[in-house]
Length: 284
Image 1 (spheres, rainbow, N blue to C red):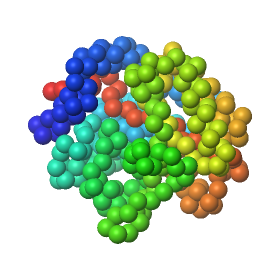
Image 2 (image 1 turned 45 degrees about the horizontal axis):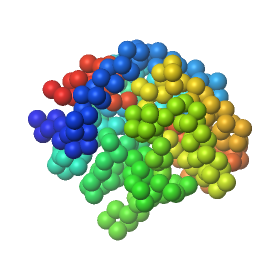
Image 3 (image 1 turned 30 degrees about the horizontal axis):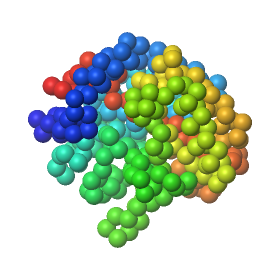
Image 4 (image 1 turned 90 degrees about the vertical axis):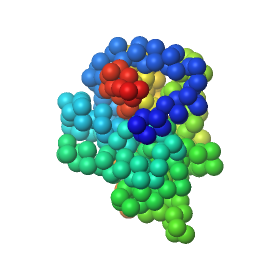
């Protein structure tokens, strides 16, 4: 019950009376089968030979092995998004460790190797990075959401027990699809304009930029053109769109972007639920 209580505390503290509204919105999004959502994303990504990284909640992955097979057979990548979608700030150190460890076991059980991690809600405690170090993750893509890191245009490491972390962190843009669509109610052309500007600034510094574009939104028929337009513009700017592991490994070995690209753009998107039933089960 502690894990579930943690999630409910987060919802109430962050959403308050908007919980019902959020549930209605998620029900609408889930009218599109997730198979179609993935096919929409794969079609656009394949058109530009680009990679997408999916941090996925492991307990949800175990219940939807056919969809997981679709992803694992593609050019794209799976990362750990924990075992349950719970805010780590509301659970104990032991529960954090168990959640991360169970996610690793779960993905191994369906023969998927995960090299990276993003905590649910991009919520970390001082203890979380120690667990990422302990379990030998190559990279993390949630720590970089903290305001002090968002302005960076390069990979970075953090200090753990007085030493640099073995894993790399990547700065994460504040302009996620849920912020643009749910919070600010932006139109497609407005989202494209914002993301294009972020890529332009990154290209000027020959750096890296990462966007959090949840498949449940960006894979919808009404939003998929946003993904297509930013890929087309990124190609125009001579950008590189790999998976996170591909980008990290290449940078560690060469200290530059593949093909001497002007910048690196990482497209990531969490999968918290494959069905609306998955979403509702988080309440019970």
